[in-house]
Image 1 (cartoon, rainbow, N blue to C red):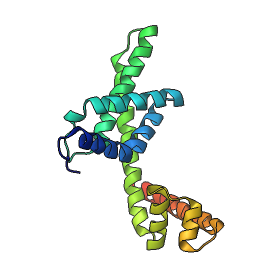
Image 2: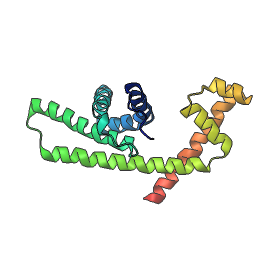
Image 3: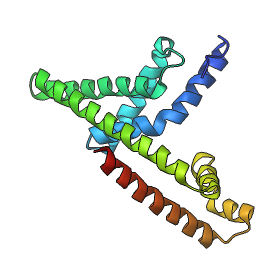
Image 4: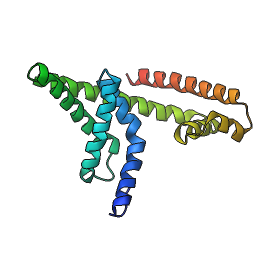
Length: 178
């Protein structure tokens, strides 16, 4: 996404758009790395604040998610260092283990996203539209039912069926990928 004009409002809006589309991915990464929801929430907030402070360092056209994940990794390491100082000196082996685990989690998430995109493309057009309207656009089940002239229950059944199809397809794709 190209960087808009230099005015502060455009810069803020651009950052917010990128952050909103990346938030779930970064937050799920943090949740995989820390065992406590409260800590994960705190780390997500700190990551967003660091991303905003360092936004001038972000290179437009590169992956905003990857950039955010790098920042999140360092925030996680810093949080462990702070906690560890209370007990003992933080060891480099622990830091390396965290980084290795982070890379592993990130690779797995990337593989699952590729599988999801592959499987999503195999859905019929109606199913794709239903998923996009509900999950991307945030349209309620009730509104979807009214839009398509169906019952709320039938929309739930359709989404559950789509979820099962995607889950089966993703699992199969992940097994095939190794």
